[in-house]
Image (cartoon, rainbow, N blue to C red; front, side, top):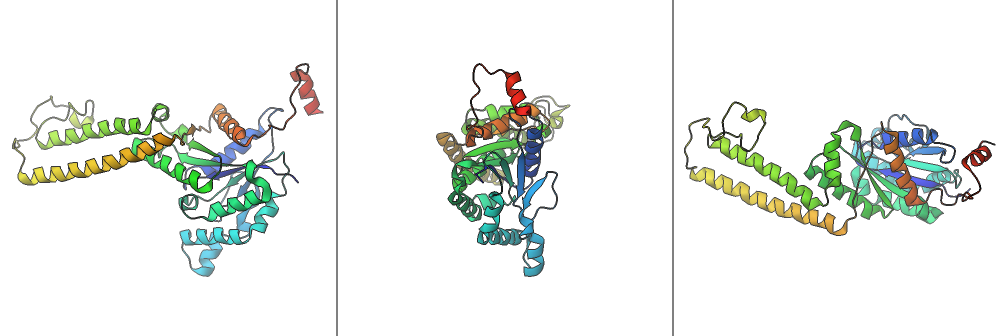
Length: 335
């Protein structure tokens, strides 16, 4: 047997890893003769319950979280870590299953959703190192899935970028970041975030919007209309700019001034930290995301072609000669 191409699908719990695996498997089954392939999916999540895809092999045949929790009295998180460490001690089981696939086959590994496995707990890194030693070093790619609903605003997007960067550094694999569930969020908002040139620029846009909200609150506390700051907001309808809403002293109390100064001090410290993190992301330019809409075949195909390029899937295929037209090639494939 040769060495099959492998996608290691990682990401936070609920980000859509299993849905991604299913979408890729179904999409590949519908491709034309030139690109059609048999996609196998392996489950490495010992806490998984059910799948909508065909499973080639399942880690629950070796160990499951339910059994560990029942026999050892561990909780869900501790049970999952124990299962992954048990898999690490029984790597022969994993490698035997991997070796059943030939070099022209395609394997997707659906991994657990416990994010610390890809950031600071070295279990997944050691499993991948063992796969490298077994000869899969140039045949693996990490596909990191992040929920688009999680990154629909700037702070969460920066957080998701940091998670992705941590996983990239920890696993040391070629890395493709996929923004899943794009069919469930505002497409224009996703495009706006993805097209922003830098994390700092994205944060500045968010910071201006947040500052307008703070000014609106301050105006309300002074008894003035919030309309100039929240134009079109339901909170300000029915009031004219500058109109007094309630009777209030023009001069804030000392206690109010002290509270405002403390809030402003914390805000500035937080903003400096956010700007430093954004600068880190911008300086190395290592994190970018590909949007995935599973209802759009072109979107799925674009992600698949990107991953194929990273692991050079199909690079060993014979080059078609100029004198061989599509009809002749398709005839050879069908025969």
